[in-house]
Length: 183
Image (tube, rainbow, N blue to C red; front, side, top):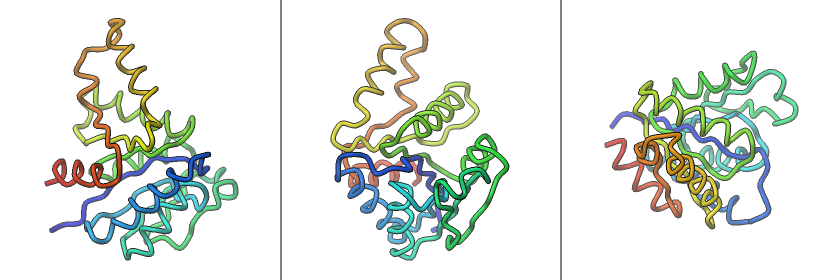
């Protein structure tokens, strides 16, 4: 079976709940077994570093993309299988998206929200049909999905918007969703 590439958007911080870090590590550790390549923001801090280090330890390929201005701040992880430095954030997102088969969003902040809404908007506009899955560790993404439902209820999007996002409660459910979507 050919390697499938999973783009992971997540925090450059670890957050306040240890479950976020544990989920990132558990997900990253499954990459080699699933024959998946990690595509992510190339940082070695926060959940980004956790998922990447676990993927590397599992023997998986890693593909990191980082803009020049974040090399120091996010501690660019240069020991990846592929390490790409871009000029800016827009180029980073484009390269990550172009090199993946599915998108997974772990807990994160404004950057993760930006990345999520960009790929969701592209999906709504029929620019791609890649699966988008939120890993909803301890209900982290419940408020976000409430907002999406509110946008739909207020007439700013069709109900189909909700269909473009899957929500996994844990790593096992996330893996099953990806296995089905990428079969």
